[in-house]
Length: 391
Ligand code: NAD
Ligand code: TYD
Image 1 (cartoon, rainbow, N blue to C red):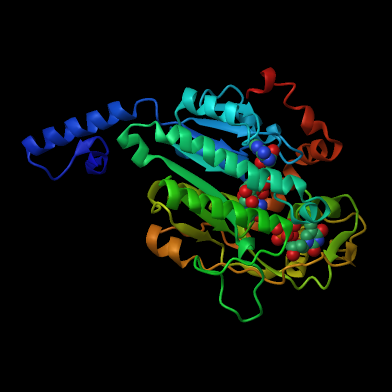
Image 2 (cartoon, protein in one colour; image 1 turned 90 degrees about the horizontal axis):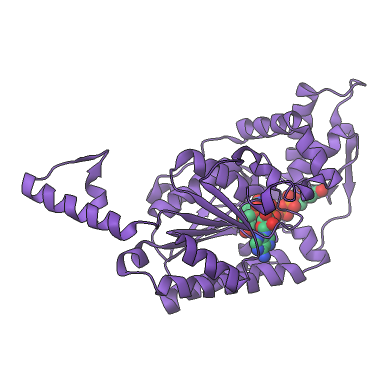
């Protein structure tokens, strides 16, 4: 592993002769790796995926292929700032399309795949689970099969360094009682919604592909994200958007259900760290150590809006809160024990909830046209405006 001996462009701590042979090893490695620096991101036009792609291109030189089906949740406008950026290639397609994925892999030869693509909204999974089974289970299975075919044909070194990172959720662990310990990586899977059950199934497939075929996989299970480009069907963006529109703020049941909240850019940095240094076959839980009841989240959003964009009648946005019927099978509490990623990989979130939520509310205030394009459906035609779907 000669690369680890390079600091900056200097070789350190070796005799001249030893350094020469290490330099040759580095060169050989570089030659072997030529054309393999690309990463392939699936679902890179959704909420977390687009934040990841934008962040990745700032933090790394490695180009990105972004494969996304552009369901209702995929929005190319999230990546508008990348127009003309030759390090980003967008491909519209399904992770389950083996012919397409196989040709992309053979053409671009990625060194890693980060799988964000999924149906992700619990309420939608309750009303129509089919798409969740199709993409999250069948799609992940087909993707794994196609990737296995590609990976099997790589040379020994590239095969060893290749990674398939599967992005999953804390919801696979089910619901915690008050006072119960936070989810660790060894916690039993007890998914309760069609969404979490489909993600749990995909996690199991990823695990099996490592144990059975040796595919070098990594799995991350993260808590609730929030931040820019969050589709306004999820709690935080929905509350911001409805509040500004003078609409009711629907709180399910008593609003005392607890989630752990993580700013999306912190999730992105955790994924980069796991990709870089995570142990193959391992699972890493990612969380923000920010357990909060939903009603407190809604109150915080209202207070920030009262400060940053007060209502014209001088009243608080809190007056718009409306308790509505609870979600069927609603999980009461999620909490993440993130000590493994912290101790093993030295990752910690950079944002507190207070800093992250303020940034988020400000982002929605500053990006009203993004919101109105989502609400009007105009975001769905964005792809047609852009060079046959390639951004
Ligand atoms: P999202 O719904 O905003 O985005 C999903 C993206 O995947 C969209 O761009 C969509 O077009 C694309 N997609 C869907 N089906 C596809 C298919 N068959 N082929 C290719 N692309 C497809 O979701 P998100 O909130 O960004 O979540 C991304 C991932 O992170 C998901 O796997 C989700 O389970 C996981 N996750 C989300 C959260 C959260 O709080 N949002 C927390 C933990 C884990
Ligand atoms: P959501 O953002 O849908 O994420 P998840 O269900 O994956 O945790 O919901 C977060 C919490 O907020 C969850 O307990 C359900 C609740 N909720 C509401 O009370 N009202 C709403 O309108 C929405 C969308 C969610």
